[in-house]
Length: 90
Image: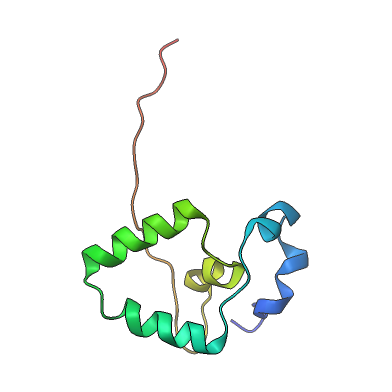
């Protein structure tokens, strides 16, 4: 998508609290090491790690936005999980 902002342009576009709560992005080398490790995991392990990282607040802004970006590499989001809670009576 041509009008998708570059990673460094997202800061002013997102809520300040979200940006401030997000860790700094990984360096290129850290990113390569992480991806090498990630692709060695099974689907079940990836699911567990993604859930743990999300709950621990370990996703940087670019990590969080990555699945939503569409472009030459055709990244896209995927439904991961859902929980249905009962509706309160009343």
